[in-house]
Picture 1 (cartoon, helix red, strand yellow):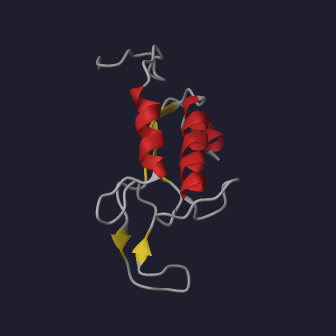
Picture 2 (tube, rainbow, N blue to C red):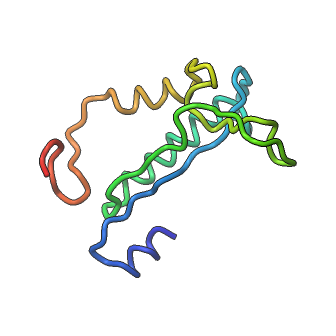
Picture 3 (cartoon, rainbow, N blue to C red):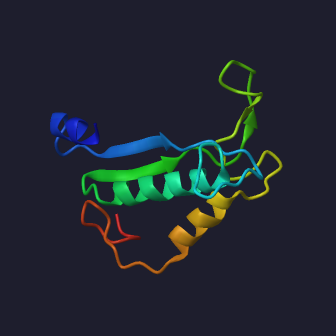
Length: 119
């Protein structure tokens, strides 16, 4: 789908504004299963890896910082659990995975050819 948007609007910056997966704090699974902290961490790592291979992407934003209260429905139990942190700001496994992802020294170049720190 990203390639289709890029073909429709060549030369325009493309920013992925929301992506993520929910995880119930303290739920662990090996191999990773939906709603486990391992699944959330692996989901985010795999999407970031894929996004970095798309030279036409300007950037991306993980949804979201912390779990938050939402109306209850058939699909949700009063919390949106897609946060890297719990509602009381305790880090989930994904928070540590993302920290490691961005803590590594990198020599990569911005997709538009601009080095970091320069506009």
